[in-house]
Length: 563
Image (tube, rainbow, N blue to C red; front, side):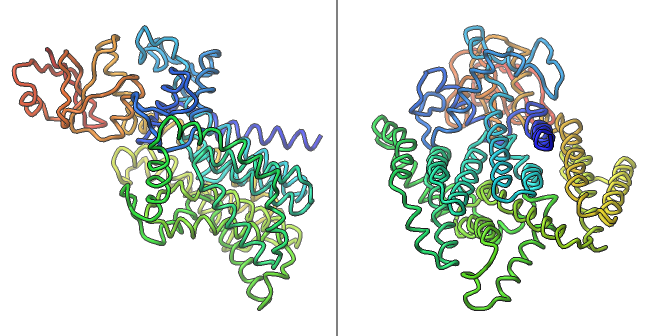
């Protein structure tokens, strides 16, 4: 009965945190619409080998996300209710899933924001299920805490809602390391087999980074414990064969079809990305320290305490302590947490999502720390309880103020802001009071998850419309479709690549960029930066340029350019 209750609890939380309102705002940035469009084109061609973008090979990433999205699109086509709502409400007749596709493309109407993001959401849910099952088998009593703390971490929630390759990598990597440790403790080869299969899927998710990081974690862990025999035993021939059987066929097939793949993917998008700032993602060396702390919100304070306690324990044992440490599980988690941070800190190209594979380890360290404190029957100190309550209150304040911050690009103090601050302060005091009670340690999880659920709900209901209006190409595409339901040519002028990729996804056709001299000969819709009509007229002499409408939230104008 208890197990059933725990499973229902996890299903409810994961369903809300990962799936609710999955299409409440359109695809964001350059990566989401780009990856979603690649998967659509592969599905249209029924090609499971070569990713393409606007018909040209797009070899930046392996295919796991694309394969998952292709399956998701097919499910969306078969079950229209999956793609028929934004934030749980029915869409009007002019919904994105229908009007943004031409008549001949109606067989493609399973391609929507929801179905594009569904793979990451399901990957996150599978990762949480694996954590729960692992802890129930090897660390009974911590399984619910470990699963919920991981699910409730800011980075996991955010990337579970993104049409990108980060969550597929993080999920397969986490399952791989859990499987390896399960083998380490039990000696059962089934766990080692799962380790190699999961690593192969990670390699199909984002390339050689998965086995490389796993090898570093395992080598440091076995070296710290002076257990080299375990490291050598990990090199299990049947497991290596499984890895190659799962990962290698696609790499061979794509190389045979696209001889430039090795140079483009391995040399440029892996080795060059690490050694040089090829794609202009340079950040300071310490970049991932604040990113890690923000990623574990609102569990950050507990993570700091857990890491400090583990470090102090290792330091206090002196020379040879690492080999003699009693709790190898926490040592393993600490190494798992730190390796991605240090490895990617050394990279010349840094993006926040790179350290997502470290987040489950941080969450599990927190659950271990809380379990130990409960065993010792210690109470939460006043500073810690107040600080965690304040952090939860700050989380709620940020969620309630997100719409205003997005519109004004800063926090504007108005009467509404003061009311929001008062609500957040009362919320923070309530959580602090609960944590400082006799049962405070038992209430940490419940009180914090309440703050997370309220915060996520506030963002989806209050901030999502503003995010959609200001950051997504979806409303721009809807405005274009309001003028022409036919697939007229689209051109762009002085807009950023995020808007460009978004338009190409929602309209399912390429956009011609004026700056590159690509001016369509036929009549077309032009999406341009505001107040550029005179410049546009000079670029198309002799052709009539008619103003259609403006998108003030994104500083764009729409024009009709005649023949």
